[in-house]
Length: 314
Image (cartoon, rainbow, N blue to C red):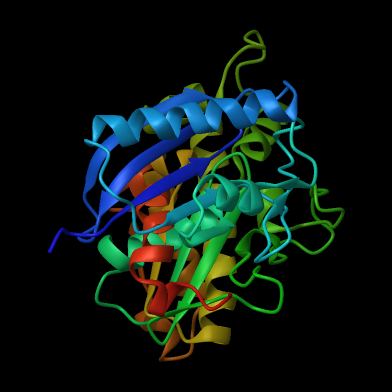
């Protein structure tokens, strides 16, 4: 019997990735293309379908068992009419319906991109073998997904695990969601840059980026290091709340900010030492992603290939 494969897609604000993924979570063929975020809806749709055709051909055109997609939100779920904040070309775009029309008879499953990262890491990555896992993406925003009892927890609207909007600083900086003091308002890449600049980091270099801030933190620059430690402490406070509520055993952290490594993770663990005081919460294991940039694609594939654990909708 031919091993099942899935067409997997990861749609973000700067790039679209697509792959053919087999039943063991291995990527058979993969490609990427820029997200034409400012173009018309149909131009962006064509870029996506052209990429899918390309990776399918590269894999030898196997018969897919379905299509799995991670897409930045917000979206209606499970219908997946998507309106990604960082993709103005799509507002209420019927992504799941359009893919179902293109691949008739196949299951098409679409979830939030951060949820797919959590699923990928639980299925084949750093959360494998652990039943209660929070997967986090700390990047331009902060998102997450939640696996409890070995199964993806969706919540009432598909937004369970949205750790970026746990309040870590009541009365703190404004968040894009409209609240104040959310984890995203403190620990996201843009928030880190804003805070560091406000404290006087690189005043003569207005074009300095998050990558520059990370490099300075690793080199021991005081303000850059404190910016990263501030983000890490906020992540630790959020994780303490999450694990007290959900009795987690593992938190997997990915995304661009996590690439700083030890300065961030050390601060996360120090905050957990202060705020996670119940015996069960002190068991929480905090680790970086094992699958890197492939987490989202592999998680999107798992929506189909391991749907008994990761897909509860129709």
